[in-house]
Image 1 (cartoon, rainbow, N blue to C red):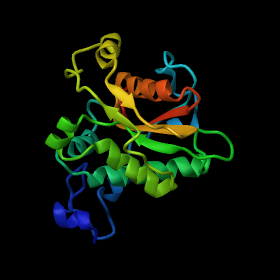
Image 2 (tube, helix red, strand yellow):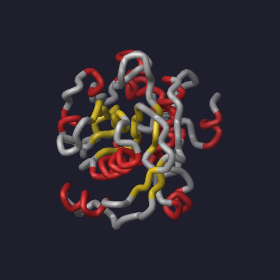
Image 3 (cartoon, rainbow, N blue to C red):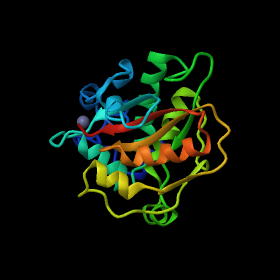
Length: 228
Ligand SMILES: [Zn+2]
């Protein structure tokens, strides 16, 4: 029995059915029905092409589709708002296994090297309020499956902007300007990790801060969910 099971009822995070001993986080039917994007099998996927305004991106992949009517929304909601951070660890592991299976350890990056995972940071105020940064848990899961190291100190969120839910992409980009500041960045390749990508304005802003600090760095994006 995992530690997670002692902390919350052992029910499926999607359908709520009680889990049997061999199941973890999801029941078997929900596990096999996961709405995977398979972005990692196609460089020119819809998520990647949505970042056309961010030049020289090495790759972009989300693990699951985040559809309005999908029962899997519950999983993301529990992860993001209900404090069930183990879901991020678990899903990150599954995602990491897919990436490793398809690419080997180099992922989107150059032959013979491997990337560093950087979770998109929250402001310290927001982090205190929520108690954890869900992107860090996802990165930890990815790291557990792939062996890629995680750096949680390379970039900081310097301002927490207004809620973005009412903005279109251009307004979001404007709203996110200067929201991140990168520190020491001694890496060749970075995969920036976040829980959900909607318009991509947060990813672009954070990645822009990384590139300002180290213009030669190869960048790729990974998220748990992609809003179509
Ligand atoms: Zn289920």
